Image (cartoon, rainbow, N blue to C red; front, side):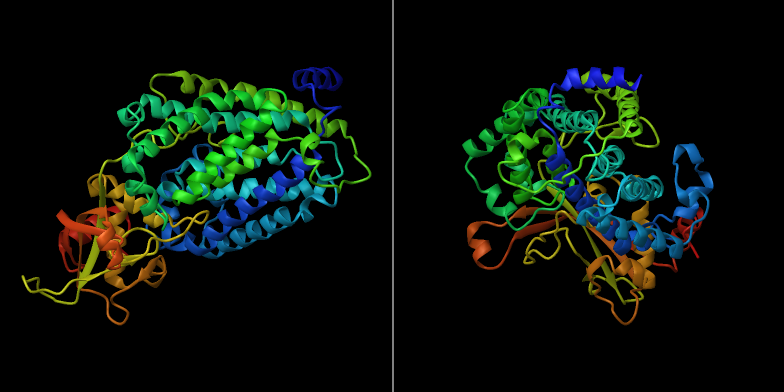
Length: 498
């Protein structure tokens, strides 16, 4: 049975004997180890204030109503902040082993333990992370990490079927993003989306201001290039070399442009990692000259990789149907293990930028002369003179969610009420998510939220030190106090009041 499957996949790829993928696996594993490194670093820094025992969306409250198979996770068995940090540090250590190649230098056992452990650990965090772990790049890391578990150690033959499955992931990432644009915002069809994107994207970086000022024909050309790379190029991932080389190269160029022009966490970086399987040793050997003397072959490893191939084919049915459906979903999972998912990005582009600005005061009674002090986040716009942050591939999760919250009523983002409650208590863990707390000594008596419209500064304003100009639109939330009985009741109903 194994030999039959082997012949099928070798015939399908046509490259196993003439084009091995040892270098491909070498660079892919270390690059993916780096993505895991970033993921677990974020967990160590942000997990407790976001979803810890006393976080904004406490996991224990989520586990009270969650069934195991709806959200498989080690934390179903036990949850505490200390236990989370222990598992976070184990994941961090495993990512270092993967990034340095130690995980793949000592045979199958260590390789499977490290890569399988990374996947299980990260799955456990994502499945209970709720809103703060509901991003497409989280499930993309899980799907990619699952396949990486079966690539094998450095001295083993590279299973070609896994290389092809990784290309299939890359195809869905890019083609899904292209289709969601065509079916979404009309500005993708009239080529005007880039008129707004650099200003209204979740977390602009310092260069976004400059990109926004490009002339209209460059913006329209950028949209055309986006359509080409996302809708046409992905089919070339499955073609023989050198066509697949050019497809991978164009995708790398495209992702590099996105990295330079904004902060999209590690979405672009993991997409770069997925481009690596587009290149084989025929090309890479021209640039590198190290390779192990012995290449071991394991029929168990081969058979398992073919079984994974069959599993992915079966699980790909629903994502493929979604891909071609006029009601295409963006960034969705069809199984709780996130083995085969659907992806997409920026199906719609906001035309103006609204920001929620949180302010507090020590005044016990609100009057027209009350002095309000602003809280400053690490990544999202606040002070108009503050230079935009350079964050990617790291991710400030609370800043990104504040961007979503500004688009709709707070009732769709109830965690923001708990955020205000934490500010009113001067909660140190939650305040660690901020760049500046205007009340270092005493907690505020009231906190309010106002909605501002932000626009990039003009050239003249930029010379005066302004990155943004802004104006107040409306009150997002009125002044709230822990002495307010209705506010306390809302917190109690949600289980947030200690």
